[in-house]
Image (tube, rainbow, N blue to C red; front, side, top):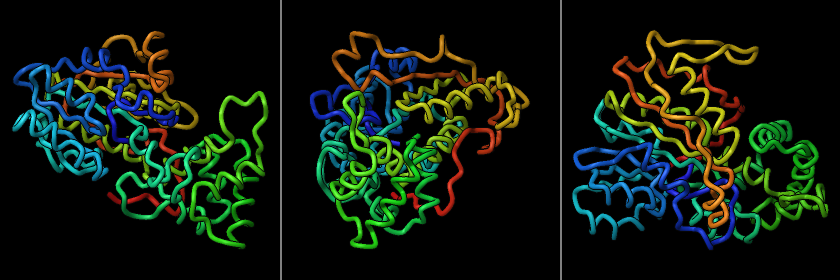
Length: 340
């Protein structure tokens, strides 16, 4: 879902834009070293990749954003053949590496701070720009979603992906407004949300925060991408390889937690999710889970405050089936997931 080593779902402005979140903890979990091959599925500004390369490892770096790949050319020139930059979603990592060929996979889930800071990308409610939000810069945009989708579907998106308590009211207000004129800019959407749900003095976040989060997550199919990437990483890692995930939102962390529970044989069934155990554990948990950023880092880098790191070590067992039903990925109709 992003693509930056050091990103977040919350979108603060630029003072910490190039600080990789929980870098020391990520390196400790990955254990990069000369001779190891590690995939950074969320390259972004190259924070994790640079640190891994500095440890002597080889890196395959993926990003679905063409701007991020273009921005990494100087790093590639510096490290030469030890860095491979690839324009790709991380869910498609097996298109670029062989099965059981990697010593590590790291994913930093969330929107890139570079994307947030660029008004023309349309990710931020704080900057007026086209209502876009496409990480891969292709496929249906956020404007397409709010202009075309039924009220019931918008309500589900805002409610499930944004946990927005006024989801229905905001969806109905969008429908009324788009009859007058289609949504084209972030400011138009923010204006409608503020009318329906004005900011109160005690509110810690802007009223548009959850709607923008939900739209971005939906447009980029971020939760589905994450789930598919976990299954792909399981196949790509060697026995002893490390899978390290940094997430910033409870929906993401829930998926990662459930994946490691299932694959370590420690899942417990519930009313909502079936218990499906693989024949043998494919991952062993790595240390205490989850790991949170230190108070010192959170003070320096606000993006780290909600970060959670989970990691596992690949066993010799055969990879389990890529059964999406075992993971808590919300099912939403009429997918408008963006390409790229």
